[in-house]
Length: 170
Image (cartoon, helix red, strand yellow):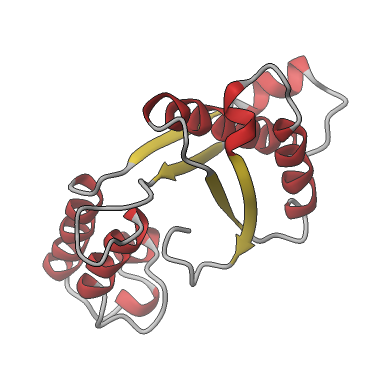
């Protein structure tokens, strides 16, 4: 189970000031302006979906351009990997989403800790993919983390939102 996240700075040195993620979205949209639906790397790599008529060279060029947008961006990326088999051995009573929830909590804490260390006055907003199965518990875990009194970053956890794949960050 992999849960990934991106920390974007609140502003960039552009005028007018843009949210760090907004500046990335502008570049991303410029590269993907020809697409009919949200970008899916597995579709692009395999030549499926909206990429079924694209040759391999064109698909690779798109992947290279999008990778460059992210590599050059003022972003911090984190991936939390949980072995589902090992998790089940340790916590057999947990439901099927237990490994995901472990990843979510660790991801929120890791990003908030890093953000607190570089910008202690910055608040953090998290956006997760909306899911009937996991959004409620994810919100509950976020709210629990906000109440950890002796954790300095807890007071910076300002809000959590949920959306679908039309949000580029997802």
